[in-house]
Length: 70
Image 1 (cartoon, one colour):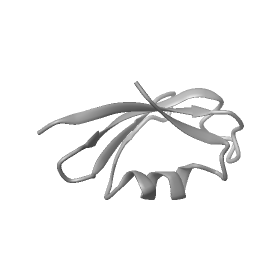
Image 2 (cartoon, one colour):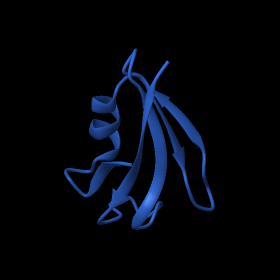
Image 3 (cartoon, rainbow, N blue to C red):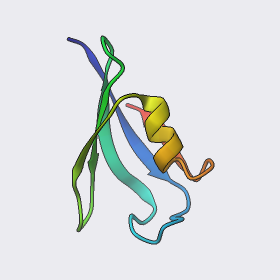
Image 4 (cartoon, rainbow, N blue to C red):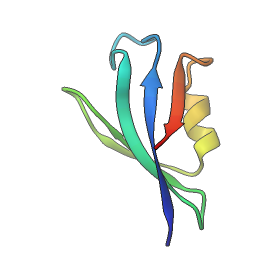
């Protein structure tokens, strides 16, 4: 199974929780499109999503957070 790594680059912290800059890292499984996100920082956690589109919808904050492929 192949995967592609990415990270979140947050330009503005809309929620006041994650901060700005590199706030999460993750990978997308190319065979299924599912993705895992590991949140960085003091209150980090790991989440699983059905698709990259779901991640952008939930955490993109209208372009304030960008997904950058590594």
